[in-house]
Image 1 (cartoon, rainbow, N blue to C red):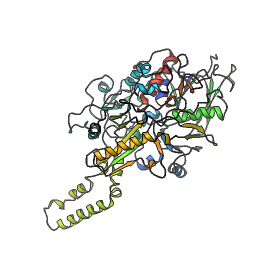
Image 2: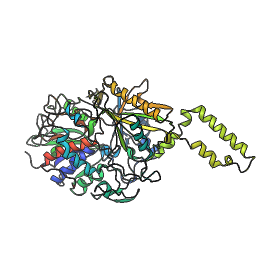
Image 3: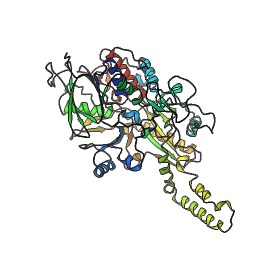
Image 4: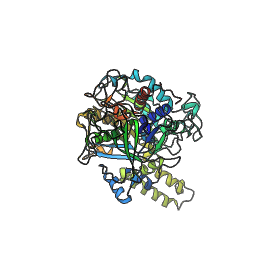
Amino acid sequence: MISNLQHEAVVIGSGFGGAVMAARLSKRWPGKVLLLERGKEYPLGAYPRSPNDMADNVWCPQGDSVKRPRAVHARKAARGHLAGMFDIRHFDKIDTVTSAVYGGGSQIYANVFLRPPEAVFEQGWPTRLCRAALAPYYDVAQQVLGARTVPPAVGPDDRRYIKRTEQFQAFARHASLPTKLAEICVYFGNEYSYRGGDKPVPLGVQQPNRYGALQTSCTYCGECDIGCNVQAKNSVDHNYLHVARNRYQAIVRTQSVVERIVPLNAAQDDDPDGDGYHGYRVVFRNVQTGDTHEVTTHRVIVSAGTLGTSELLLRCRDVHRTLPRISERLGQQFSGNGDFLAFAIDGKKEINSTYGPVITQYTDHHLFKDLDRSKAFVLEDASYPTQAGWATAALGPVMNPFQMLWRTIKQVTAYAFDRYYPGRKNSSVGYLIQKLLSHDLSQYSAVLLCMGLDNAKGVLRLNKQGYLDLDWAQDSNRPLYDAILNLGERFTQFIGGRHFLPMPNWLWPMKNNVTVHPLGGCALADSPEQGVVSAKDGSRGQVFGYLGLYVADGSLMPTALGANPVATITALSEWIAHEITGAMPDADL
């Protein structure tokens, strides 16, 4: 094996899998690990909030010809190079929303750390890989990410009181379904989030976390999914990546898109027929300048996310012909994790969907208890930013135009009439405004987030232009979606809602799913005939046919998880890193 390569490891991607690998491998080889991330890094307070800046906050850089929604391409045509953090792709029957940012999906996910039930691992997973085998790695990941339930509130006047949580729990009891508070990776102070204490620090207080990164105790602003500007989210740049970079001198290069991975021979020349024994050359491009760079390394860990990893490996195998040994199973077993978004609108019960961390609880529909694989999912509550709440309030006249018109006429008439009778309460402009805004949709509407056990029969492939395409088996997953729609209708009835609205993409004639949790494509398996990446001890996480080429991200999943995938992605990455480094991971990093 060559000893004078530039790096011990190159990690491609900085999401949960890449962050774990960067931390563990840089501890094993300080200063010898390079992390490549295509997106930008956002410091404290830098995430966009204005409508104009949010419209630019999408990923569509120069040279990008990926199939995206028309609005994204139109924005690029008007503004040019777009290097925002939301990577939105449009496929036949399903759209995806992922991230292009330092910290990957940890910057835009809804914070939930949820271990799937044991039964998930009993069908479609490698023989010896089960929840019990991953238990110690789940434990470490949970400690590092600081996952705990929301701190309890003393009562309705407590700033920690979340009305939305209470209403979702009440619905679960009404529907005779189990409900639990979700463990979420949100900072409520070191004592509460990391030491297991029962006293969170007050909202908005800043302090260094256990790893030395500055964080703020959650302010309950509901902005978790658009980048936390107060850094209350336990995203991986505040733990794994922070330690890798500051304690173990990991080298980080953002805005760097990897284009090729090539095995080397003994002379350090490119050798497409090689198996990686002599290392690899990684070729990448700076998306801002367009300059191309290359480095050599003993190991490559591909953690570019389900879409990015599958696309890169497909291109290396089928276009560049640099990794021809990769299994024919590459791209198979894609799952949208049963993701489904819906809305219960204009109810009679207060929900207050603009307050609190994005998710606080989950309701189990035949996933953890009384498993029914065709209809197994969880229902989670959701909040959204106050800015979106104002936009939602503006939808009131659209949803009920005649009712709103009649209400406005009555109030204006009453105000005009009362001008001649001083002292009447309706003569107050403040009273008029209060009446017009008192029943806004954000206060009386709910966002329903579901994920479940779809059948993972999607297929990722390259189109004629060499970019990723997806065949999605939507029809065969209809029993799951029908069950989700049925429960959504019941929730709407429970709150007395006027409308139940599935995600707009689901409406005729589009009938598209949307997933924010794409999984699969590089499935873990016992053999290359069954999958792409080895699950066997001695080659954990290693791509079949290659030495030193690893995958560590959501693409490893052989099936849907039903639960939020963060816990399993992080645990599997710890499991792989354990074997590479020879050191059992712990939460001290």
